[in-house]
Length: 305
Image 1 (cartoon, one colour):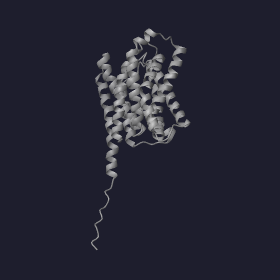
Image 2 (image 1 turned 90 degrees about the vertical axis):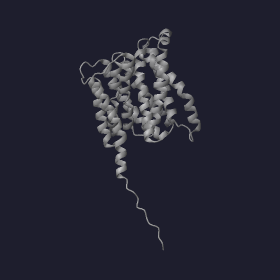
Image 3 (image 1 turned 120 degrees about the vertical axis):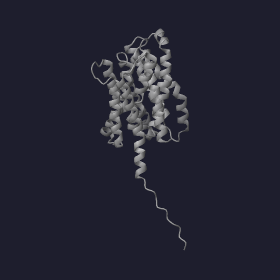
Image 4 (image 1 turned 180 degrees about the vertical axis):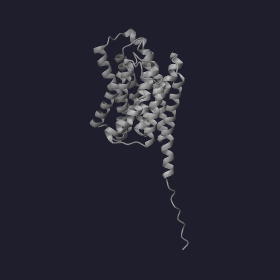
């Protein structure tokens, strides 16, 4: 798979996640966040399991204990990010949720340098700052009046950044992205249901009321989008993947406006343009530089002797 196609997969994942914010928000009218997470990821696990089985069956080498440990670590990061995000949606808007989750676009390259000494292409830093500025403008250009939910979203962004970095490393080493996604989902499902039984009251009527949101986010936002993330990140760098996935902020604003009547001011639209510009730059500029540094090989004339 080419890097451009991988980036398109990540952009499509961002679109699904943007729409998923609407479903996650409306689900909280009927069901607790932990119960929702547990049920959502049961659906996600069931959605991906057949494809993971086929992938494992075709693999040249079986999964090792080290591989399973890696998948459990990823599942723990995913669970932490999901709990903070889903709880935050109780006290913040869909629009803010999409924007603040996008903070991982800056955290990914920073954590990559701190944890693994991975220095990205210089344009990634510029694009990360542009994306962060765009996210800030999308929020109205002010940090006043942040709710508890907003702070939870920001904390969740840290775990999304960690997950993005480790997915890039494990996907490259293990080479089974669908299986990796499936086991992640199973870890989150088990952890979510255990916590829901302890901390929330589970009622069948509320589960039925939230069933459409559970099915949509389980099949698409989790089963499809997180699997696309696992596949796409294998063929691009973690910082570039984070920038393309940050498009979920754009799509969250778009679907929030269409479905929930949330409206963006002019400064928010300018923020959308900045995020879109950063995605174009991170895709195009490294390729231009690569072409300039390539040197045509001299053509040797055939000897006539």
